[in-house]
Length: 395
Image (tube, rainbow, N blue to C red; front, side):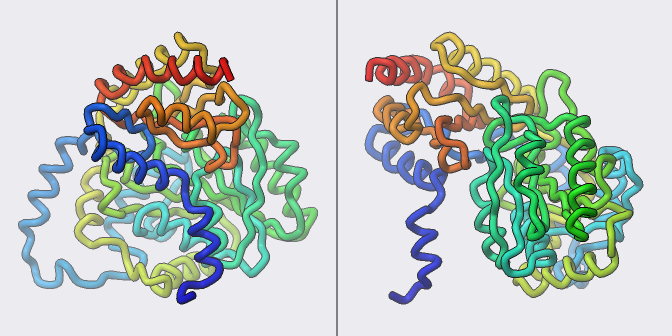
């Protein structure tokens, strides 16, 4: 076999999101797109804000010499300065351009962090439910993912985290607002987590990093806010992108920032910058760096997602599904009416409704619904959600 054994194994376990997306393409070709309700992929459909189009048109007209050339591997300093200004307000800590790197999306940023931090066998705690590719990013750089469950409402379960920490623990990844459940971890919980990591680091004579993956930070509902990670713990790194809040997932533009007081900051930033180059990213896309620098206060119309959240929550509640209403992002993560979430997702498929089983997010017994789809898709899914629920109860 030409491909590696590891890749063969990964292909066998390949992402449930991708599987359901491909099944959706097949079903749409067979039954027509108007007859399929595809909630499988978190691909934002709300258009970028009007300012994006204006800035983009202005910047592409710039034909200055070298405008598409290389820049420092960490990105344009003035772009990083613009983002640092906004982050200083969000994080309630003074962040400078020297604390930041521009990255090829949040995925590129997370891989850079793992490359810079991990020795073979180092453990990284992942909180279930978690984004499906975290384990792959950790494995890419010789680490071992260690799954810890959140509580019944997907909040941090600090005793479980404490029990999972060992001498091999290098980091913990949090994702708030969370994909797939939409939970936002509270400021008190983050402070308690920071204290826990400090005590554990002292016990094992090491530094345990808190990595916050925040691409949904600006997509929140019902007056909720995303607390500052930097205020809670100094050995923290924030990774984010413009894929969700500006609806630019295909442009692969993101950034990371380290806490200004993080330990061994100069060495860490040097390692992160080198990782950006040697992993083949070289630098984040030059054109999109210049664009997002002008859009730090811009965001998609989140009221569209808020309306869809209310519509879908009502449909699910009326049928009898059990779920925690999301505080942010654009997902709902209900409990499956039967223990086997994969079997229940198959029942939904019979109704031409595509969702993703919770086992793919480390939380079997649930399923994910991505409501970044048109209102009409949500409305016409109601009868199918009820029929699948009734079939499950009759089994």
